[in-house]
View 1 (cartoon, rainbow, N blue to C red):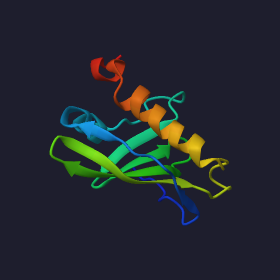
View 2: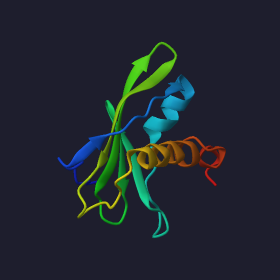
View 3: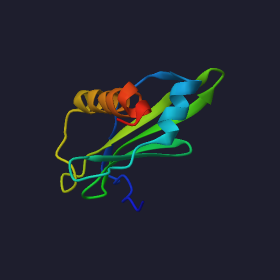
View 4: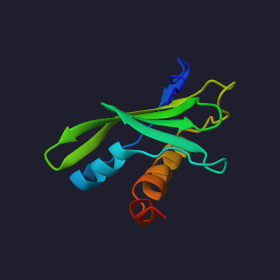
Length: 115
């Protein structure tokens, strides 16, 4: 998948989280949009987890993961601030969006079952 890199116009967002080894494996598996309703491609290229809009291929978020004894932890997170690519301006909302995408898309039980 060819994605455009996170633009230089970016902001670091406050996002701290740890993941178990099983969760880390699920994060690394990522998700590729399968149809027009799917809005995100999410993929892992060590050490970054990338969140890319499926239609435009713009990278909107990226999260740095560092391996730990029991899985991994977030060491940095960034959000685009290029208004030509993304209209978000609230770092707290960006952190909530990243958290929601991880929880509901990558770590959900539906994702594991293939539903």
